[in-house]
Image (spheres, rainbow, N blue to C red):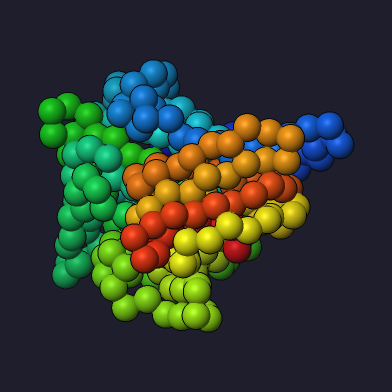
Length: 261
């Protein structure tokens, strides 16, 4: 997890972000998070001021208008947290996280788990690196909520596995489904599912972090090259994207999506 000592590094990298307008000749393309990075490779070391002796690695994979995406890793470490300053979506890739909040709430997260860490959380977080290092993918908003705002949830929690598995989906209409996994004060996380079809997207209004849960989608920017994203892939659909979206799947094409509130 990104803890207080290192979360301030992420905030400092994103707090001054300004939206950049694409000129008329620019092609706005989806951004794929590469498998090599998700495998824990090519992540540079970073010294934490609060814990200079700790082995810690971090790379900002993507910085957009709304969202920033990081890959980070550290050796086994215990972190005391008071009033966690942001909402954070985390996909745990390696190792185990042990959480304690008060005397009664104890839980563990493992590789493959999807976690939401709410703004305002206080407690103890222990990264267990297994064979030395843990690894996680992190998504945060580039916009900070009001300093006194806190999420309804008080402790980190596992996102609904049934909905992530396509069980109990709610219909928007006969061809589309949407289920909110959690809405915090900075991030909104939900599943979006659809009957396979093709559509045109004109000037995408909101940047989206997308994880393909089932099926595939081929996205072709206007005047750009087609990219196909398969089950397990992570990518960003940027603000301002225009082009075609063609989904395929066994009954449904399903995704997890993170956006800024």
